[in-house]
Length: 256
Image (tube, rainbow, N blue to C red; front, side):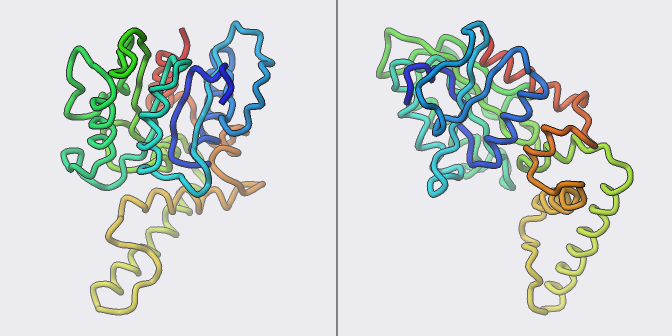
């Protein structure tokens, strides 16, 4: 790691890191410069007036929520670390479940950081931010820490649910949703009648939004992933309350 990597956002995988990078380019072009941890060569082409956000998705073989949580403690212990942000999917569990990502992240942060006030039982609507927190193994230093649970810190879901909230395409988006609705309906009917499952996991209906998003992405002029579409901005509404709230969390946490 370069000594310049002082402000880190931990995410679960490659889709997340490209999404955040392109989102920041769109929403915070003057406030943040985004780089990927694994692509940093130690040089600093920045003019030192704009904070650099380094996004760490782990390796391709070590993505996912479990491996991301394992990276929290080592990152906090690094001498150069000033800010650690954490972005994770809420997924399908209830927030009070010990298996919910928030409960696991909360437990890990309380294990390695000395908070003056206990972290809340539920995620903060605007995203968690705690400033000047002392690491238990570095009591003479402080850092900032923040957590955002996709999609909105309140709902079960994931990054794709957030992205779905940006779509304002009145032509193909309804068709994509209709197509997935029919497919899910067929899967539910097959489950009810004892027929062989048809590929869609009806035990994870929060995944419907993910299927709808990828059906919509397939209709783009140049079909691609969410991050690439965000960089173009076509068919997306960045003035939505949720987009503005997430951008504000990123700015408040990393821009100082």
